[in-house]
Image 1: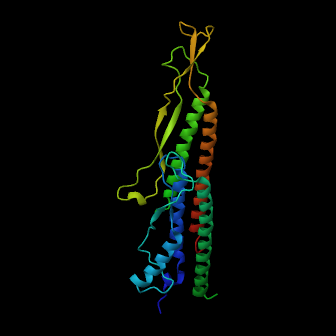
Image 2 (image 1 turned 90 degrees about the vertical axis):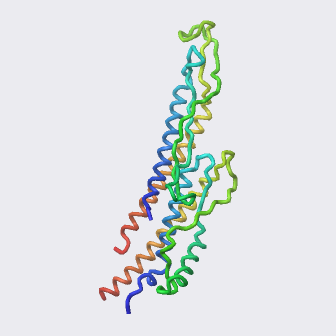
Image 3 (image 1 turned 180 degrees about the horizontal axis):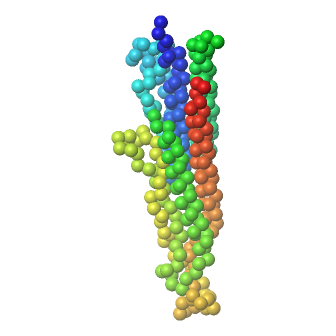
Length: 129
Length: 138
């Protein structure tokens, strides 16, 4: 039986890609914190991850239940609903972006840890030690 | 996926904020530079920030950094003071001081330095995450 690596790694691959993209989106928000007219954006993480999980079972039947559709590389960006938009049209709330960035980096590290342990399990199985 | 774009974005933010800090420094340094002619007196400088243009084809889904579109000179009229003893004074004994609001500039400086720190923090975090990713599976 061939090893289904995609199925083995499960949702974590897509989660890591999404978290990496979210880091970029939040970095762009923070860089444009003082740009007039800039609208803050974010990713609907839950919806994107759910879509990735569903997409694999329907579009390519090869991978298992936890499989990932890697064809949808980029998540759709949505505009953040501003709490208190500035008069210059900017909707970036630095504090909110900072906390989202911190949360996202912790999530990224958690995903890395999970992936790492999966890979380590695999290595244990391969070497048989 | 180009993860290295985070460095470009945060870097653009840092460079824009440092331009802003530069103009604040220039405005504060010249807050008391008087002149005998209202047309040649120092004018306060303020950078105009703009989101960078996304790469062609990326549309509005692309993450963009920030750029300094230009530095605008203040159009506020300089204030005149009667100071006949000043060697720069004009025929009527007036000197002209630039319309620099020192308090406003200080606030701008604090805002710029906080934004700069934000970008540095983003850069550091992104760097650490990428280094951790490099060690995946080891």
